[in-house]
Length: 281
Image 1: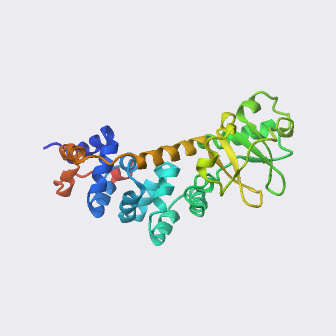
Image 2: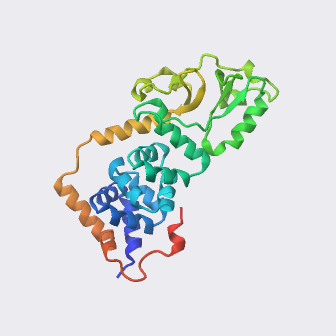
Image 3: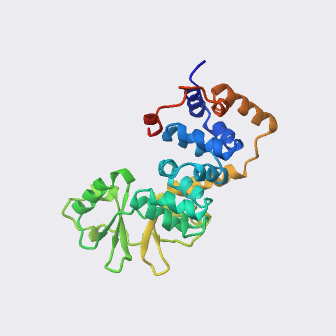
């Protein structure tokens, strides 16, 4: 008989949305055990296509280490939506397992209503003081390369926005030029409490992929990316779409069974991945 986990993984890779629906139909404890038995990067593909409520049940029943690994590898918006549905005690344990900066981002996000800018912003922002130069900004961008930063926010000593500089602008100026000589002082700021759908159509997105988010005191506390707005819109659209028909569900269930997902209920000896595989990402 073919290796059941490998067939299950192949099914998730080919049809992650269908795999997500099948996992949602399984008993949470069984589905959670299955997710723990496969590489995290594969589990993410299926969980990313689940609605937050059933996904949160699975994550909540996984071990803290495995659940935190899954949360870490999901997109920020997907993970945040799932964390909101998890019982606070378990959620706090998961957060403690995450890197400090990511934990801070989630804690900040969870403090805001789900339909607001604050719930989708990131606190991983590139900021410099008013006396910084182009060279300082370019060096900071190199350090934050993994975060795909494309805008530098210049703040005063009260942590309020003076202006913004895009990477495109920085590359056009000599390294010794002060940032204040190339600032866009009219850069739009967003209130952390503004509704996400209210800011989606702003003209400012034509010039910036990230916009600064400010608190009620006017202090910069994060940035909102255009990608986060788009993902939120797509997620809402998906939740409004029709539910799969009975025939579609049966086809998915049959396909999953053929691929080996259902057979995980009675795994054969030697079929499960080894300990090293479960840590793969």
